[in-house]
Length: 175
Image 1 (cartoon, helix red, strand yellow):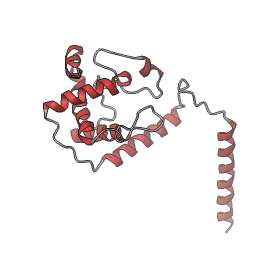
Image 2 (cartoon, one colour):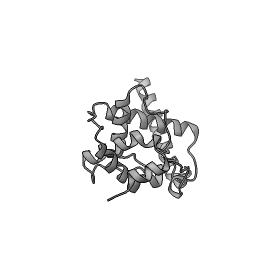
Image 3 (cartoon, one colour):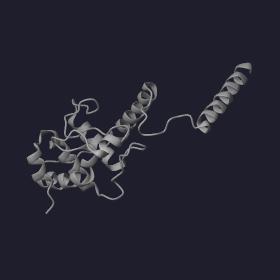
Image 4 (cartoon, one colour):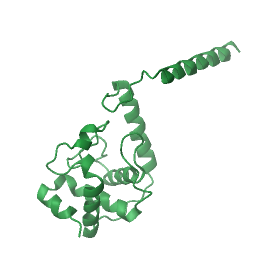
């Protein structure tokens, strides 16, 4: 019984301490103040594990149709390139001002791409495009775009790191 009272007391003290910390306003919430390493690690782990779990059962359709590349490219240019950049671009006003910094999708990434499983990469990209990521600036496009359009953006993302600025301009032009 003493052990239960001890744990309840410690829990109550922890809850009061957390409440005081939150209501004090001392935690820096500005996007121009980086998280501490432990906070960043916790947030990154939560994000990556959540995406991996949530995207595990997504069925990846065939993305070989060239029309997907064209429609996905135009959407990427309109909706994504100001944050995630274009071939030959290293930063933009949006990419500089966001925290955490959005990945430059025009470059080849390996940290979270599960490169041993190409479908896992596609599932991850689709899930992120559809559902967004809270408090990161990444919107959820699922409420306004159908799955075919979202998969077209995934198809485009598969080719994006290989494109030259000239190829990008051709593939992203709207009719």
